Structure formats: structure tokens, C-alpha cells
Length: 76
Figure (cartoon, rainbow, N blue to C red):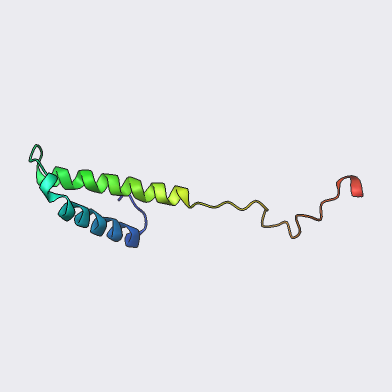
């Protein structure tokens, strides 16, 4: 539900389960295992969006502009 890409969602779940397995000794039992896993999942989803934002690119030239260096003000 939080990620619109099914492949990305599946990868995030796999990363979450791997992180849980690697850190299962740090689980103190103050919450249910389900809550603990959902907490890890929440952080992995945030990491996913941070990565997307970090690698986001922008076009500096509009698509309809064929030659951005051909601009001549006042017809010169």
C-alpha cells in the first residue's frame, strides 16, 4: 500500500526480513514481534523514498526546446 511499485514493495519486505534476522538478538520483547517487524518495515520504506529522492533528476531543458543555445534576444 505504501509503495506503488510491486517489485519495490517485494524487495523492501525481503530487506525487512533480512534486517530482522540480523538483529533478532536486539529484540527486547517490549512489544509484539509483529509490531517490531512493522517498525522495521516502516523504516525500510522511508529509506526507499530517501534513495529515490537522492537519485531524482530533473531536465534543465524543456522537451519542446530543440536547441537551448540558439536563444537570441531581440532577434539578434
